[in-house]
Amino acid sequence: MIEFKKFLFNFVIGGFSIAIITYFIEKIQPELASILWAAPFALFCIIFLSSIMKVPNLVITNFVSFTIVYLFLTLLFNIIFCFLLKKTYLKTHKYGILISLFIVSFLYLLIAFIIYHYKINNYLVNQNIF
Image (tube, rainbow, N blue to C red; front, side, top):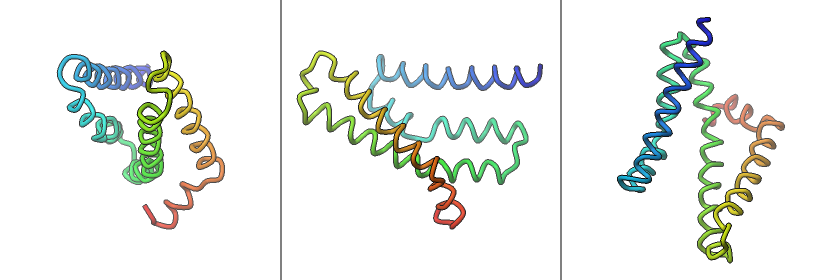
């Protein structure tokens, strides 16, 4: 039962985070929402909750180290997404956002799978590059 309570608590915190960012996008100012999103807001929550739940420091440190490569991948995702919507025919296409989102999501998942499958992240972390 305690595992379910942990899961439920994490779920509520995550939902609250998404709700705040969405609220900022729609009602306040998209730039402020992007600051919240770009700040490792979710990462802060995960680290904080993990430390409360007595996850060993080494496990948390390894988790943060592994995220570095995927943060670069997320940056690439954003650049390609903006390029598709600003520089291609998709900027005027009725479903341009959805098509762009599908393309960059596919590329993200493909590259993330390659990084994971070939253990590229493990190599970088074990070599103390990150």
